Image (cartoon, rainbow, N blue to C red; front, side):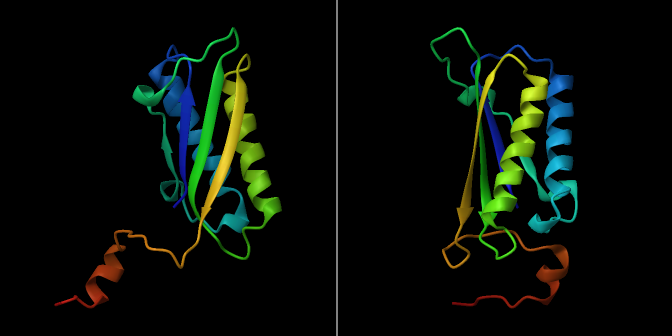
Length: 130
């Protein structure tokens, strides 16, 4: 499940605009078929105010970090580039005077991670008794 975090150097945007932006980002991401996401709930968008840093300079800075993208053969460089461009452009639409930097980080699915199983997987799974 992709996680998108947006860090801003200014905190003056209305909550309704932030909610709209979050929903639009989810829609843009799910539309990229090669990501193989089923619905908007398959994408997490966070706008962590407390993590926002104040940058020196006259132009607002926005950093967008896209993480938790599992390496899959259909997630080519071109697909990730499209994801970065689409999300970056959408953020620029909301903040036209800001400089936007968008990065993505993939996860090797052979590494350790934990995800809460879906309800149908919980019922049929085996319990570890060790």
